[in-house]
Image (tube, rainbow, N blue to C red; front, side, top):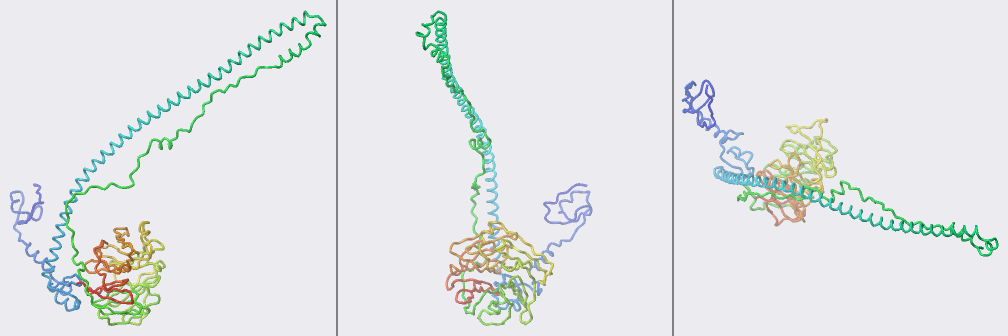
Length: 539
């Protein structure tokens, strides 16, 4: 049976009984296969898939509206139930607008691919240049070694010649002294022989009286000559004094050593122009909704519709955007941070505890978890039902996995400790006031004048730093925008979900902003000086 390639098959018109299911009509030329006609289901399947995409999952009704507050497509039934106070419009225009954004992104992506192709080619050229550079370096080192050997050998030869010449000079001087000494001895010897002959004649031939009278001091003369000796010459024989040993480290210091450069050389990139992609919603205009004061607000967390929980001393109150108190909820002692607000529960951190408070009841708070590591840490509940916490003191993250229904964890549940890199530990100098997870699964936290973005493994992805700034509160909207308060510069900044600074969105009528959150209707709630709560909208 023949082998058939089906890579280019686009429309199946028949079924092969013997081999693969579908192939086009032209392949019928292979007479050894048995075929039968099939009915086309492409149109029906396509219609079903399109119909499925345009139907609401909750109400099984056609999707006709777009909720700008939630960034979701909804049906008419959704609009009357969960999105009553939200801003919405017909989906047709918004869908076309979103497609335009996607096409713009596709065009930029194609340009990016073209740029990468050009960069790859340039990188290959630079790779070949790098190999050539390394080969030249090796040749230079070999030539340097040869020159160094010649220089060292020449120096050693010169030093050897100088030392040999020095020995000749010392030898000449000392030999001269020895020769003079020998001549002096010969002269002394002749003198003594003369005295010996004269004395011998005196002793044998002189009369007695003459011996005493004429040669009275002859004995003294003989005695002096016998006792007097010639002074030995001073001879300084040559002695070779060896210099410092020729050690490896000394030769290495003289010869040199190859090292990797401290600063990298930047690779060239192709110069294809890529247009910057705008944000879908970049908060072009902040419209003030309301402003009111409360007594000693500590933090806040967004809730359903246009409502927000505000943490006060000994209580947590639910406020609407018009400044009215909807509900008073008692809290736990030493409450530090509201981690989560659902329809029926509030999750609150207190030192080493995380407790669950049932909204609208006076029941005692239920303990969810207790870990001593949490006492001096800033906590955050991620979208995958995982609690993370960072401790400046211990320079590490802690991680605890919750059950899917956010129930009380078991006592034996282990806490995972993840030490951070020294670079990150040096960046986080104070306990972060807030930690969030973005739509792109990144983790963003603030530390003094820095906004730090980490990946899910707590590795640094981005660091935005501005001197004279004090970044504090963080929140994210439905479009993936991240809003950060700058208390020192009296402003609210816009970042992407990847931690890139976009722009300042609000700097007027705001003073020393601290905490910030967003309610379900898309309104931004901000705490600033004088116990003031300010509410803005940009949708």
